[in-house]
Length: 186
Figure 1 (cartoon, rainbow, N blue to C red):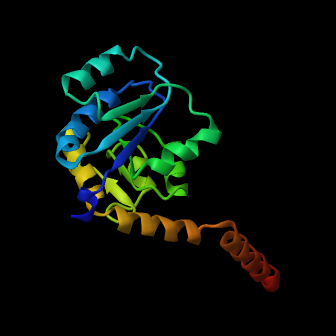
Figure 2 (cartoon, rainbow, N blue to C red; figure 1 turned 120 degrees about the horizontal axis):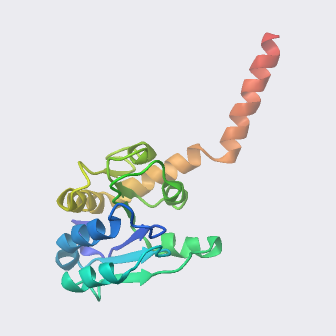
C-alpha cells in the first residue's frame, strides 16, 4: 500500500460554477478517505456562485485543515504549479460534455478520477491511465479515489508513455510518411 503511506495532494481543478453540486460531492467523497490516509485536497478556481455553502459543508465534515481553497482565476502561467503538486485530478461531475482539464492533466501526467458522465470516460483508459467511477455517488467516487491511490505510479508511467507516443516529433514523422505514401501512389 505504497500510495496510501504517502502524503497525497488531490487537485480538483475547476471554474467553480457548481451547477451540478460538484463541490458537495467532492467534499463528501473526500471525507471518506482524508482522515484514514492523511490526504489533502486543493480546490482551485473561481467561484461563480456563493462559496459559503461549501465552506459550511467543509466545516461540518471536519475538513477545514485538509482542504485548501484557491478561489481565484488561475492564469495559464500558474496552472503548472497546481498540477505539479497534484498526485491525482478528481473530476466528480454530475453532468459534463468534455474537459479541458483532462488534457492538462494528461500533459502533466497526472492520473484522473472521473465520473461516468459526458465525454469524461473517454479522456482516460480506466485502470491504465486513471479511474472511471461507477457512478457520481460520493461512495463510488471515494472508491475511485482509492483505486487511483493504489495505482498512482502505474497510471503516471502509462500517461508518460502516452505523451511520448503523441509528441510532435512522432506526429510529424507519421504525417511525412503518410504524405510520401500518397505521393508514391499517384
